[in-house]
Length: 315
Image: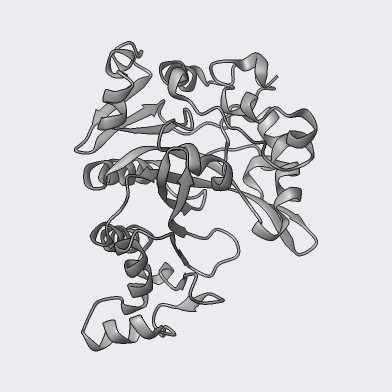
């Protein structure tokens, strides 16, 4: 199990609200997925999370979490069930994907702490016109990080994607997002290895840029070609490995994910910095700020995204 500072490892709870929790996260930004890829991803997630944790799902057509073993089927779901379609409760999502509309699906084990979580969705974007899609899998901190590597490599072999990242990440409470990010700001200033997630800010820009370096950084072959990144990868030291898979590459910065404590003499983030420098010219320059007191007052969201290749912008 990873040895993390207690402030990083423990959820931050105020009253009965869990504002923040550190997890192991893997996020891929997808080329427009098909309904076949959607089903493959759901099936694969069930394999890696275990059937006992594959319990509840949520889709826009329903108002709350619904049990996968006793789903409240929509009209299209009932028709799919009559036709013998597997997982008929996913039919509204499949229909949205087939007709290239916005879609969203979440799967959750029902645990308030130490949970596993699957999240996939797509939204319309304006610049350039089209859609942006993602898939995200989150696991508790007692998960073996090598399992995250295996998942990243399997996805990079099987699913068309643009880029992605995996490692330590901070989750926020969706109903208390401002307060969550106020807390995250203080954590992120000290522990640089913790990823901050706000798909509302980043997802619209992930078709044409990359979020930045993490312990695992995934880059699709088309993105590697478009930005001529292969020579950059050839300059990595032995602390950074690159695995070429069917759909893209998986870059690993060191043996395990790091919290990157800036109060330590050596935070150990040299490998992260190498990867960030290689991806500098295609790293996102977000047009809006993260929420929360710190980001809103200091307007340094860009500094956080660029911290590994421009550390002065975040110090």
